Length: 100
Image 1: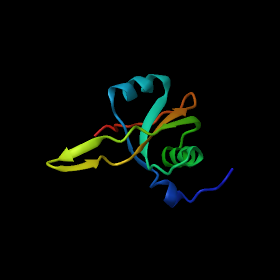
Image 2 (image 1 turned 180 degrees about the vertical axis):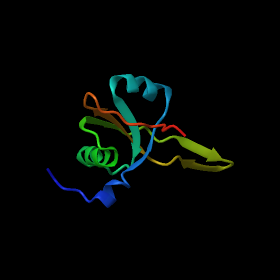
Image 3 (image 1 turned 120 degrees about the vertical axis):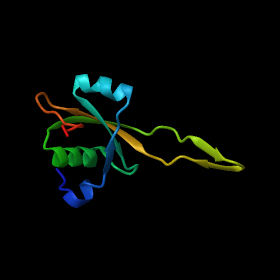
């Protein structure tokens, strides 16, 4: 397996995505993260394993379509991002909301 620089891996994962669909996936031990668009599945797997000390069984990625946004007469697009659905092995979990 390729070794990745841990300083680089920390920048791959931007934030966890908390939506209704993402919370339903938590019951199946699947977590959804926003990652940089150039991240590959092996890099995402290595990043999640190093950041959260868990064992990842699979990584599914998807690129949502760009949405057009308009401000007055100026037309632009929202920023690109990539979603990664990470499946963890049995017994592992990630605490998204630690007790304050």
